[in-house]
Amino acid sequence: MKIGKLSTLLFFGTSLLGSQLVSAEDSPGNVTTTPEKSVYQRVTEKLALSYYGIYSGASLSNLTSSVQPGVDGTPDYTSPQNFENLVTMGYRVNKDLMIGGIGHFYYFPVGNPVGTGHAIQMLDPILTIQQSNIIKQGGFRLGARLNLSPGVTDGDYPLPHKEIGTVTTQFIMNYDVPNTPLSVGLFTYIRGYVPGSDTSPGSRTYRLYVAPNANYQISKRVSATLWVDLITADRNQGTGFISGMKNADIDIEPGINWDITDNISINPIINIFPSNPTLASTSLRAYLIAKAF
Image (cartoon, rainbow, N blue to C red; front, side, top):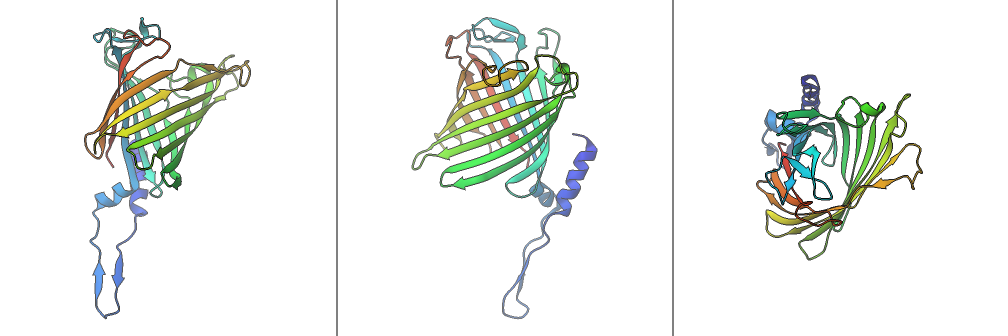
């Protein structure tokens, strides 16, 4: 993130903080004052800074491979091992609403193509508006996000296809099953690709993504997780609005999540393709979440 933008967030975060609270009782002179918060506390109450990373690794049948496996179990040399990284910096309007920006990039420890040395590939930046607890009733919670992303990098889809950018609406639903340690959820989004005046023929117009998931709390900091990439369907120009959608292969991701601290968690998983559930097509992955404030 550029320093100028960070300075602006810090300024507004500090200036909008509440002043010192004072309360008085009936007795004259009996005034209680809450301790004054430090500048750091005031800033971090209004700012959000977090990291979300995804490691995509090798096949279980060949853990020393530098590439990920394809659905058929053969090495996919167009998909080297990598870390996908998203760094979010935002301003908290209130406890449920955040507005900010996301830096998005890949890190290839073995290069892309493989053997060319470690490399970083920047992806399009994202302006995000995130609202949690739109509905919070009983064990059910609904949140939503609006992401706006201009096509400015060669590593992402829009710019090479001469599209302006993307608009993505996400919905996050969770339900805590009463009297059990089980929580079930649904993460879904629809992403529209904004065409330009000379967009390449046959370019992507929208994507629909649907992922049911579950979490079973084993202990205070350890849980079993399950994520299913059920629908990842793209529709291109010149095809039917519905009939033109092409769904990617479904994969299932069982794993174990460990909350190392209140602000850091790691979730190693194995990625299984039900259409070809072999060791050669199954790969290692891991999710890492870290929150500074």
